[in-house]
Image 1 (cartoon, rainbow, N blue to C red):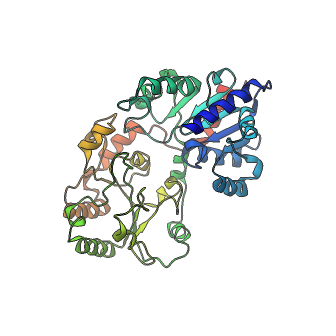
Image 2: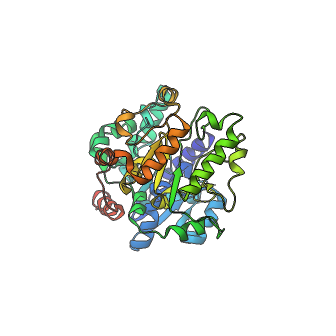
Image 3: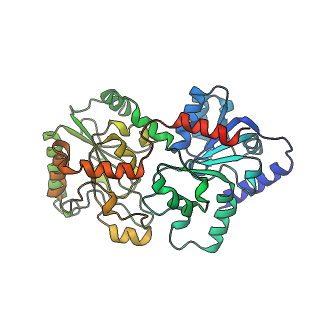
Length: 401
């Protein structure tokens, strides 16, 4: 909170002492707490840098280590540090601001001079923003005046989601735009899977594989995520269950990559011990791939619970398996915008044996979920092609006179 207050005070001073009009050919991009290079903001920033030389594109990064990496990649002048007055003034020089979370600077009345586009970072299967439970009136006021009133547009992926995004972000439905997600452009690119795997795992000798599985559970605000939520994995028979999984992956020539937020926490030493050269069970956390969208296209099957990553994955027309083992508890603490069973087109195994059988079935005969997946894809993914160029065009029409 102190960082936000500091940002607000510095920004207020910079605005008072700056009389210049922002430059329409300067665009700035930011993501989580101005300290992450991810989500739709990073994808669109890279696109603009590559294909729109007439635009000066900047990215906000307050983390010094990450800032140095980005400066080496994109040039020192392209990366802005908003923890300084100089950085704040540089943002104020830009007419167009893109964010995947909150704007890079805090203040009221930005819409008078700036065009702020919230690209967000996924389809709101779960309740987000103002739709979350137990938000106080102070939070709602803070959100409305510092965020909602400043947005020229909030971006989503289908007309079905316009009312949800309108309520969640406290903006009129007219300000919700069905433009798609720049990060999904990666799903339409061809990729050499084996070369990419070798790059990720630093040229380790990988076992031969025909299929890649991605296990990507949702981060839980309250409590830990249970990996493999079956009794066999949480008792004295765990060793036997792990061996059975390894044999299953070997038999089916699969590698399972696990992406989660608990890699450094205690309690999963038994899994971390499997993450070694030659193993068919590997972690794929942010230390190896910062943004999973960079490589989502290389997976043949997705395993998740409540993560909206599966809605992006639907664009690939590949099978999905769901493990909503704590659905009732999760529903009470977070809540859903849609009926979970209606919008999750895949099996939900309740036992370990059923889990393995479901994977095998999805890989080899799809178990009749193809039509269900197409139905949900049509519901949530209107944009069926790369969208970055279209977004640039729309923003120029909307924000540049």
